[in-house]
Length: 250
Image (cartoon, rainbow, N blue to C red):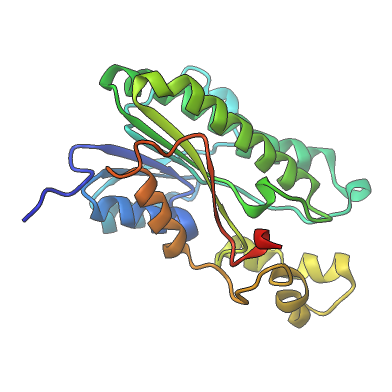
C-alpha cells in the first residue's frame, strides 16, 4: 500500500465545522494529514475533528487582535472562514463592512504570518485561500464581500512570491455559488434587493452567469484544494483556480 500523500503533514482549515471547510478537512485527512479544524462553533469543530481523527480549535477569527502574536505549526493552511452580507452600498452598515474585512482579509493575513516561519523552517508549505468567483469579478449588493475577496487574491499572490524560495506555494480557489449554509442564508436577502421571489433567486441570480446550471458541491471544491497541496502541484503558485460552471468563459 502506498504512503498517503500528506502523511506527516499538519493542516489547519478555518471555518472547518461545515460546508467547504468540513469537506476540505475530510479530504486532507483522507490523504494522511493531521487536521486541525478551526471554527467559532465549538460543537461543529469538535464533531468534524472527531470524524477525521484530528483536533479542534475553537476560535473567533473576527477577534483579530488575539491573533497578533500567534505562532502556527501548520504545513498546510486553508483559509476558508467567511460570512456574507447582501445590501446596497448606501444601506450597508459600516460595522458589517469592517467585520467582513477583518474576518476575510485581516485574519487570513495573520494566519499566513503565523504559519510561514514553520513552513520556511521545513522548506515546504501550502497555503490555499478559498476565494470566490467574486474574487475576480463583481456583483451588485456585495460590496464588502467582493472587496474582501479581491484583497485575498492580492494577499495570496504576495505570499506566493515571498514563499517561492522557501518551498511554499499559495493559491486561490474560486468557486461559483456552493451548496452551503452561507449561500442558503442569503436567498431571502437576494430576493429582497433584487425585487423577486425567493423561488426565483436560484435561476435569476445565483446561476444566471453559469453555463452549468447547478450549485458547486463542497466536495468538488475540496478535491481541487487537495490537488493544490499534493505532490503534483509544486509549480502551481500565485494563481486563481476557477470552479465556476463556465461563468468566466463569457
